[in-house]
Length: 291
Image (cartoon, rainbow, N blue to C red; front, top):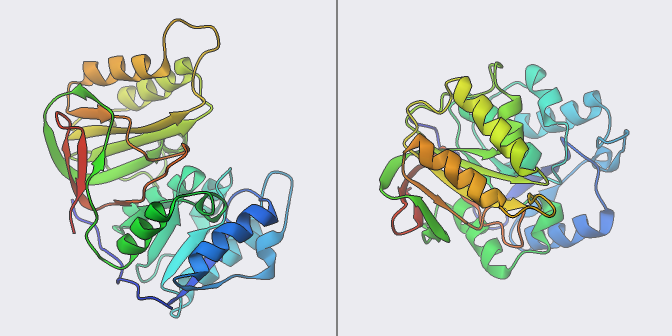
């Protein structure tokens, strides 16, 4: 299982900002845009700021905006303004052409998985509305990933199942990934190191989604599991935690697993290349992404 890496960026390259999911606050977006503009030349359409209920414009507008970015040969990368919800609605009509960097997380997981189903790599990283609140170290790692430079291994907080696993890193947001079961937009996870993170999902829901993946056969043949942040996922008043629930499920699966990586909806969201070969040393709690 191998995935095509888009061409590396250079400082000053033209990049597109799109809103394929939810609407966003302009001030928060502008802070993230300033970080992006410190390295590249961002471009976006006026329709970026549209609103339609819980979406950043209707499907036709968001679809056209994303498709034009993917079709534009002068665009070297496509950044999502925000997650939320809405990417899944665009996937059936999406036309894939020349691989380029797709950057985002959360609901953008749907776009990442569809890209991996096409054989592309993509970048699980802050959206624009999160980027402005991230540290300079996160921005530096983001630029390094886009420009084809090596990055330091990420450190997790705990070992769940010891051992070492290698394979392509796939996954992202657990709830979005689960919603793509039974669709043509979910790539095979066999042989992969599966990355999972989420926000606002109570422990029983995390259990239910994991169990759905298991019953669908998607956890068979996994090389390993990486748990990022599960933010706001605690049961009020419970004597047990979401981490205990997830650890128990991963322990039963039996493949190398480490948890507590700074990836997802937490205060720090470190970029990682989806589709890239990685080594998970669950015993040492490290995740190394290879070129």
